[in-house]
Structure formats: structure tokens, C-alpha cells
Length: 545
Image 1: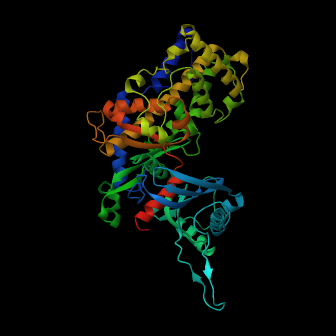
Image 2: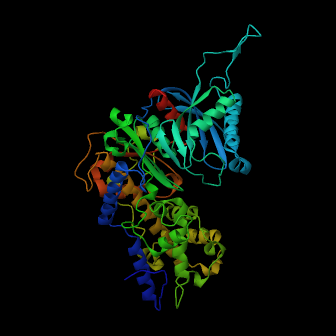
Image 3: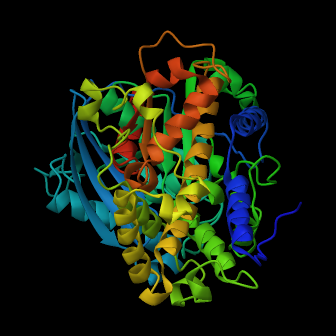
């Protein structure tokens, strides 16, 4: 039967049946995970073979990753929103680095004015940073003029290498070349689209006589991979699980068939590919679509695009949950939530932030044994996964509608629900009289359903990369000889959302088997858009740019 968001519940038995049906829509059994991951692999192959597919599989022309032994000082410029950031990264050669950074505001006038004015401002900001904060070489060349009528002689000081993180659509054709395709995020600088962003920036540096050379154009996901490789010693995948989602991984160049007979492909070896997996399965042929997802997509600014992202990223999870809760409030002939009352946040598009979901789940987890932390580089040296597989297997199935039956819960769980109740009243601006303990249990259950599905789908993306790079076999039964498989991650969900990493690993174990999952070391990639860009500048120097 086709599911709709119109809910009819004439009796209490019907109410539980409805919750069970919603639960079934969000469940992802192993066979569904396998089918989704298989489609991922098909889309990988298609994107590597041809241009202009949603799963873009963009060649980055970065042909190596650092191992943590590198030293030197590199700059990064990160432009992607209201602020731009200039960073200096000093690599210490022992998997550690020193970061100095400063933010500079980008005004609306700069965003919509002439491109040369915007890029001159970027150059001025780098100049200001080098003058005030950095320990690198001088920001402008020094001159020696013994003869006042002679030509100035430049010092032999080399230019400071800089990596540019440019978070706008770009068609990248080399490590240091990329044509701006369009502006987003409120930017509309004139005479920029169609031009090489690296040249626009370098021309501004040259106009200002800055001793800086932009040697690399970087995606923040690629930066996450490079950052984790430096602190962890190696890395095969950099992934973002936050407001949005994406992944970049190390691919064999021979598999990137769309490079044709280009010099890059003839050289062989390996290259980092930016998958742009947020656009996976825009047609929704395998993604587990519910009416609540369809509503999110229909009302979004980009319907039928970024399909995968709308199921798993922090920008959308709260809105999926809000749609679920409203459908229960509106149930007839008797409401199933909040006595049929709503509120400003519940009635507002994107009025329920994913941070509220995190707060609810955190309250429910209070006092329980923590599971599977995402490792920082220090923890990674002494602990591979943070938890044993047998302990992970005992993580409760909080997605069962059983947990909405308050009378069957333990006193400790009822106390946890009282905390959830308080969060709901405060964050959703509801009258306390309209939020029963049963309502709190339903909201907690619905929250867990949405987040658990997101984490398990995220596991499909990670598993697909492990299979694509021949480190695993879909369904298990094969394991690489490598002692560990390093994955670098960034983003608010993977870092802070309770049990997100545990659920992701649970999905991964079902897809590639216990032996491979146990080797996967998921660690925090520190500052992919800053440190990662500086490390990409390092790789550019290594590659002769």
C-alpha cells in the first residue's frame, strides 16, 4: 500500500500500528544496504568513465598523499561564505603541525561587485595576514637599490606557496587550474564565471606585488583526506558528514577512463577523486524514500537534486523529523501527538534544527556506556576503533516502537524521558501541558529513526569506497593485508551526534564483514578547508607546480 502523510487512527491499537508502519519505512535491512551500495559502485564506474553525471567523480590532479614526515610552511586561503580565512600551516614532520589563522569579513558589496575588486580584497587579506600574524617569508619582495636610477632587483626569496579552498562549483582541469561555473551562497561577482579562479587570484597577488604563488585549487573533502593522512600516516578516504556530505578517495588513474589519453592518465599511479556523492541516486530508485522525504525535496531550493544528501546531512534531518511530527499532530480523528497542538517552530519550514535531535538523543544516552568515539590523532596511536566489535553489537535498537510504551520502560529510562520532555517544551515552544511522557517517547523514537537511517546510509558510502579500492568485498569474505584502513572524517554529525559513528560502523560491518570493519580507523580530519588546503599546496610542490 502506498504510504501517505495523511494518518487516520480511530483507536489506540491503530495508533501503535501507525507507529510500526512508520518504523518499517525507515528500517534498512542488510539486503537494502547491499542494493544501495551496489548502485553506488555502478555510479562510481559511470562517473569515472564519462563527464556530466550527477555522481561527478571529479579528478583533482592530486596524485599523492602526505605521510606525516613532511616539513615546511604553507599558506591556505578559504573562501566559501560570509567570511574568508587565511591560514599559515607549519608542518613539523612528526604528524603534527602549527596552525595560525585569521578571518576577514566579505561584504555584500564585494560579493556582488567586480571580480577584480573581490580578488584584490582576497590578496589584501593575505597581505594583512602575512604582515600581522604569520611567521612565513615577507609578504612582499625586498629591494636592494644601491643605484637610485637603476632597476630594482628582486631578492632570491622564493614565493610562499598557497592552497585555495574555493567552495563554489568549478570545472577543474589541473591541480592549479579551475574554471568558475557559477556563484552560489549569495555571491554574484561580475566577470568571474568562465574564468580560471587560480589566475584571478594570482593576478591579484601580482598586482599587489605579493610574494605568494597559488599552486593548488582544493575541495574541502580532498583537504580532509590530506589532513588525516598527515596526522595519521595514511588515508584512503576523506568524508564530510555534517551540514552537507561528500567524499574524496584515492583511485587508480587507469580507472579514471574519462581522462582519455591525457598526460595525467598516461603517467598512471593514483589520483584523488572528488566523488560529489551528495548527488547519488537523485532519481531515488534505491534510496528508501518516505512521504516525509518527498516533502523535504519538493519544498527545497533544489528539487530532485542532491538526493543522497537530503537523506543523511544535518541540513535536512531536522526537517524530515518535523514533517513526521506534524503528521502525527494532524492525525485524525484523534491526534497522536501533543494533543493536536503545534507551535511556531513546528509550523516553520526548517524550524526544527538537527541540533535539537542531537540534544534529545544525548539526553536519552545519559548514563549509558559511550560507544565508538571518532578518534583524534592522539587516540588513534593507542586505540584502533575505540570499542570492541562484540561490545558494539550490544548497542540497543532504540528505533523500535516498543520504546514508545512508557509503562514498559525502566525507572531510569523514564527519568531520561523526563529530560527529553523538557527539551521538547523548550526547543519547540510547546505548552508543558501538551507534552506527555508518551509524547516525549514518540519524539525520541522518531528522532532515532531519522538519525539511524542517515548513519546506516553513510555506511553505504564508506563501504562503496572500500570495495572500489579493492580493500573489501561487498558482503564480506575478503580483507586486505593492510593493518589498518584510515578514513578521515569531518562534520558536525560524525563528530557530535550521539551514536552516529556507532551506527555507521554497524552498517559498514554488515556490508564488508567483521574483519574489514575492524581494520577501519575512522579519525577526525582536522580542518580540511584550512590545513588540508595547505597540505594540497605541499603536494603541488611535490608534483612540480
